Image (cartoon, rainbow over all chains, first blue to last red; front, side, top):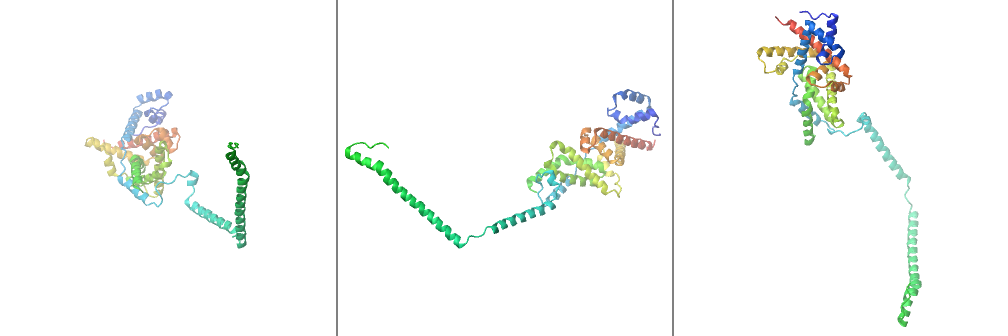
Amino acid sequence: MNPVEPNPRCAWTLARLEAYLDGEAQAEELGELEAHLGDCAACARQLALARVVRQSLRELPRLACPERVAEAAVVRLRRRRTAAWQPRWPGWLTGWRLSVWQPAAAVALVLLVALAVDRRDREPEPTAAEVARAERQARFALAYVGQVGRSTGRTVRDQVIRTWVVEPLTRGARTGLKPRSL
Amino acid sequence: MTEELLVRFRRLCAVHQDRVFTYARYLLGNAEDAEDVTQEVLVRLWDRGRDLAPEGLPAWLTRVTRNACLDLLRQRRHRPLPGIDPEAVERLEDPAPGPGERTEAMELRRHLQAGLQRLPEVQRSIVVLREVEGLAYEEIARALELPLNTVKVYLHRGRAHLRRELERMREDEPC
């Protein structure tokens, strides 16, 4: 049997056949399509074939993946040196390969070490004379603080406690009077 | 790979491997290549899994599977695609019908599979995703990054091509 010769009406219908089968024909064309399919045996046969094709495709099985595929993937993941879970880097970082970041990190480390060494070199060690002078100054400061402390203690004893506490208590004991409140 | 990660990976495979394998199998036409592609996709899924939103995962899987299949097809450009695997067709047959019907069904599927392999790749992808995997037009459009109408047009063209194949098959049948 020859394939359908595309007279204009049939060609028009066949071009819309699959959409018609899926219920997606344009509403304004539906009436004309159905009318022609009712009149034309060849196009009606094509519609029947289209139904068979669609149904047969839908009956093609969904396949089961063999277990060895997942096992092979496990072997492949285990062989990796890096961890299976990668850290979440932003996209602009993951676009760079490690080959760029490794030398960059190495250069940064070298710079840091160089800066640290340079700072140490700028601060000279104190001389022996400077150390001795610092010790003398420290001893003087401690002695001064001590002297001030002793002087303050004598002042507090003689001018405050004796005057305002001891003597009133002594007088009161002799005369029977209560000492004045401070 | 720790035991816990291994369990997680196997669970991930169990959820997705059949769908990936089915798509690759029908796209490539042979099981061995489909297994290779599926393995590659599962490894990439493990690597990228945490970065993907769950709702975007099916489209991503379809896209990656298709790209992996296309890479394989490009590598084999100088080698013709293998013919339909008769054993595979045997395994696909519906066990229920009687001998006569089984033969006809087998023949029909054989011709369909052969016809699928002769479709342009994008039509083949869409026919498989729509008619075999049952994806909606919107899902296919998202996965293949095509406009919705283009998906419909390609689907209809692909099925029309298969219809013509079926007609030729029936014309060649002895009366």
